[in-house]
Image 1: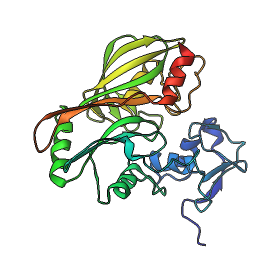
Image 2: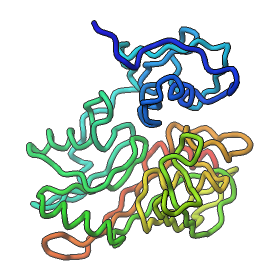
Image 3: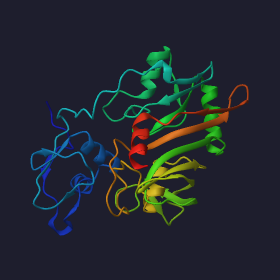
Length: 301
């Protein structure tokens, strides 16, 4: 089998050690984007001193030998997600589908992993579905799909106008106060991660309205309503203010103290509302808090 042009073995530059693993990989292969570098690491294509390293934020230095081997067998991340349960369909007509997304399943195919929610729904319904918005792999809750091109155009237009109602529940570290967080988010804030930047010409405006719901032991159950829908918006906004979500694996820089245990990033799309693309009726749907999140809440009360 021919080697991949990304393959190779190297040691990080001693002059900039220690550094994050994803930064070291990009320094060795500058043609990779930050996302590509993190994807290779998370899929088990990178080893450090002969051992697979799947955390892009891991610190490495000149004493470490790093190998990129794209042809290696992909790591199976956690248990297999069971087939999509038809009971998770919240609403369906000829135009729109609303489902209760489970954790562990990406919204769309990612990298070399063909399994995704849109594929599962296509198999379930026997015809294609069109993605209107996305939820992260770990995020659970209400998510909408279009069943016609006209419906997709109409729903995406509502998203651009910020008229879609989206309220999330999350468990965040610390004592979170009511606040509206506004910033401009860029793909790289300077350390290889998405985040807030001062230059509004580089970043895109993001607005999150945060309300505390319940004070917990070392954490707060919060409600987050979005005016915009930037990638990782809630995770970034809360983490940058010292209130990292439980289970967070990427946005760790501002967190101080112990990280409370969690089975995943505890973010749940609790409410979804929009104008029906055909009837123009106001639609509103709720998704109950999933069991794994309820268990963490119970331990922190």
